[in-house]
Amino acid sequence: MTEAESGTAPNVGSAAKKVLRRSVANLPSATPVRTMSVLFCDVSAHPPIAEIRLSGDLTEDTVADLGAELAALIRTGHQHLIVDGHGLSHVSPVCVGVLNRAAADLRPIGGELILTGLGSTDAHRLRSAGLRSAIEVGVDADLWLTSPRDRPHSASNCQPVDATPTGHHPTGGDTP
Image 1: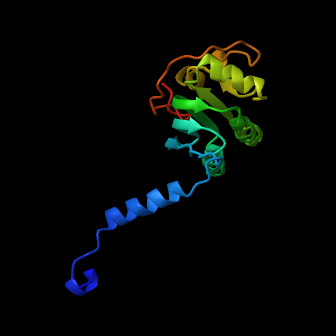
Image 2 (image 1 turned 30 degrees about the vertical axis):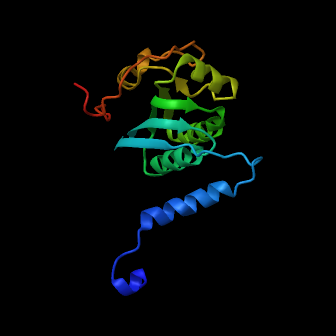
């Protein structure tokens, strides 16, 4: 009597294991196994400011997702984008093009792109790969947004500051 005739459901778990074993066993020994990177974006958007907290890996596998998120925020009227990289385990220089494009889109509308939470090694790697000098790296986002006259000159040597974005920023008319 077959499983269909007896009314019992087939054991899908063991069938899946068998398929997995076969597919791995059929790989040629010289074929490299490629792992996929994962990037998580937690967005807190209060126009004209958006904070994007990243975790995971910012690599060539995930950079398009970040680019799409930044472009969508700019299209919806966000002029100040704060990208917090505290949760990143890997930052690849391939993200420079996406960040430069976002900064170029923000400049004509009076906006800016701020990167926080990057270690000095990652910040140096991105600058060496061609990250625009207009993109501030390693500044305290709260200080940047609340004290525009105290901003460091773009040619200054900003060092990373560990600051967790609060999500509460003045939007222009709310200052005391």
